[in-house]
Length: 184
Image 1 (spheres, helix red, strand yellow):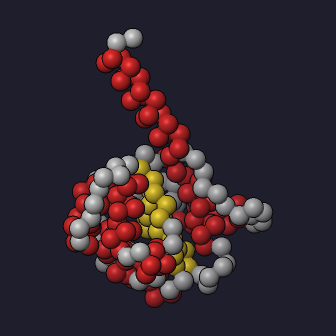
Image 2 (image 1 turned 45 degrees about the vertical axis):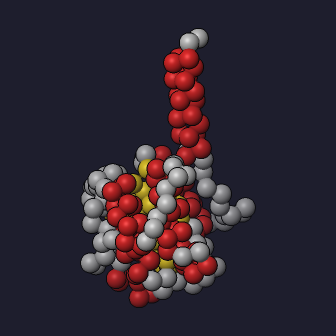
């Protein structure tokens, strides 16, 4: 096999490996009692499996009631419909301990799979995310969002996603429920 063919085979193997890793289900609770009925209720009531418009689903509740588990189960159920799918866990905690720029870099890495991306400031990070995802049909889950500023610094106004995109956010903050999707 000549060098060009071996490079081509190597590229194909890398693409398939990335695809397989990207299809791995997220781990959920060891004994997820009643989770399937909750997921069914959410999917049925939100029409999240349709390809119409952009859907922003908000999951609200106290800490420890299973918001993240439900979000992971929904992700596992519908992620195969999306080429770009991202589960960004612990947004609240990571924005405090590591900062918004770290969250932006994590999101960009998951979008582009490039380890060499560096975000120099929050505004440029938001613009890089928008350019990377603009007009793509995506599934993005932001877990444990606690303020509107986090969403704006990650996505801007959320008005540039392609039709059929699904954005799911879990939160403990009731005030975000009404705000998200209304002008965000």
